[in-house]
Length: 144
Image (tube, rainbow, N blue to C red; front, side):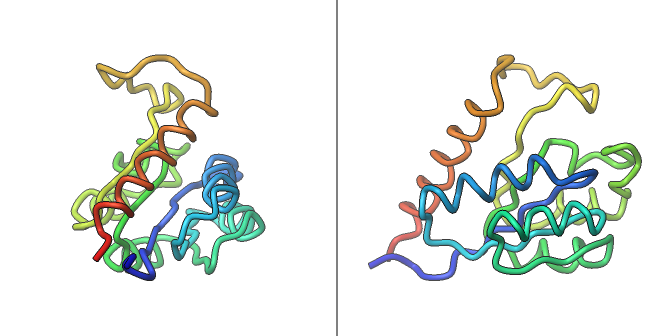
């Protein structure tokens, strides 16, 4: 029997394109999860809700509160770095994400001027497939 209601927080900023793609992929795969879209701005939140998030919230306080309710946190690697996403990600948000007990599945990006050693330059589709694999493994490891 599978544990119900695995809570995933998807965090994104700017236009929410990455978050939208992540949520659309989870919905396409029909993963048994509850998705909370957490945007640094309302455009990002709205974009993720349109992609199929169960709920959404916007801004610093919403992110800081809701990351502690999540089993998994998903987003670009920038969500653990203060002043990233063109300044939309505050130090308080980055600290909340980094210190949350949730497992973080972060997508590497050279847009934030960080190269994670051991990763390769790959397409977004590759990273979405890897992310889906990681979520499925998490779900499987939490079956009753």
